[in-house]
Length: 299
Image (cartoon, rainbow, N blue to C red; front, side, top):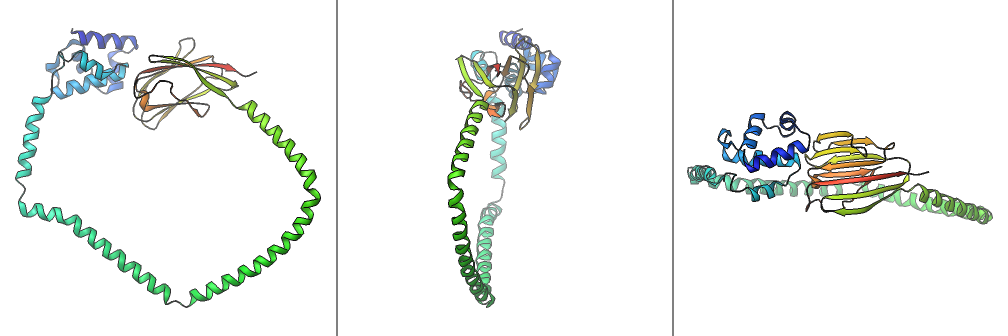
């Protein structure tokens, strides 16, 4: 077994994943996973697949694939020799296209665009002529102006009556409205939760959730990240890959702590009671993160 194989196997076992579980997460056949751990790359379908499978393996167990490729580049085969024939075949296939057909293909989009522009101009011209030649449009315009004048007169009369009644109740309503606004502001301030970061170092960050009696956690995927979620006692509540645009929701109201282990932080969004958690550590700089949220229930 190679040094790279040992490194990957240790990371997999640290995640508590069997080869069967890793196969389900990565969709890579078990025999290829064994070949990667044993350094037996000759069984792979090609050198390109070796690098692709190692990259998926790293992401599933929370390792930085770029760092692994750099550290163990002497063990991982290069793919340049396999890419050369494919590039040559593409060049040859392009040369076999007849020159006459190539010019027709290039001119076809321009011809279609010109036809569309001419058709749109003709349609606009027809619509303008129809509108200008229709006498009903002038009659409708005059009718609308007459209705607007009558409506404005009626509205002015109604406003004068409303102003007389409004002055009598203005002083009473001002005092009651001010009291209601003050009470509402106090209640809103009491209900607003407080989610703040308390510490961050390396890939670890800790947040504190206060001033609320509920704690509903939602983890949303923007790609295909691997996520593990535990409570404060270390009990595993969820582990696996979340599909794109899907979410995992867990109620932590009766828990004191939530621990979220994320394989691709830049593809993951965390919401606490529908409030989006802002990463204290940039997810584009640190892909693998361990986020801890400590919950203090409001009295």
